[in-house]
Length: 172
Image (cartoon, rainbow, N blue to C red; front, side, top):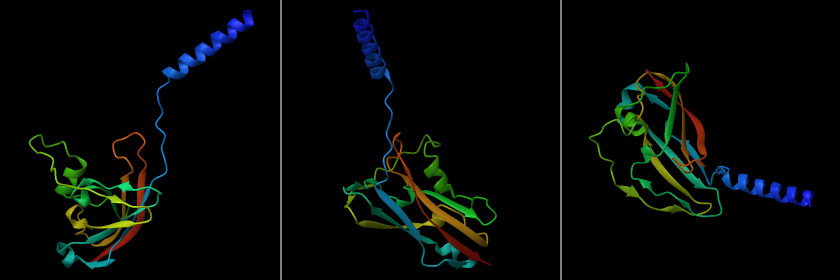
């Protein structure tokens, strides 16, 4: 009888502690991939003011639709890592500073324009990002560029998906 009572007490203890355990978010494999490219990998410094376009391809790598509904400014969807050849980050513009620190201006209101849609399995969507709207490329040299975004930004189960890295050379 004592063994039976001890077994019941142990089962109750295990049941109570398992229901009180904090839920763990389970990270899942990303359901999309990112690839970036540019038409011109070498750009004369005097043409930088015309802009540098980075093409981003988001490909659905899952077996289900991927929701791509988000604000209507593709440059705001991605984290952009732009590193000079000596290892320092390129200066960012005020526009990109506003993207990464959106709550610094209490008088600003979020833009409610948005893009709705899904990417079906095996398909891609292409976006052109004007990199020079977000990063200062006025100093000649080589820049290594990588984009990333989370699968579920702001959620504990979000997985950061990184693109390939491209090199852009700005000449004198």
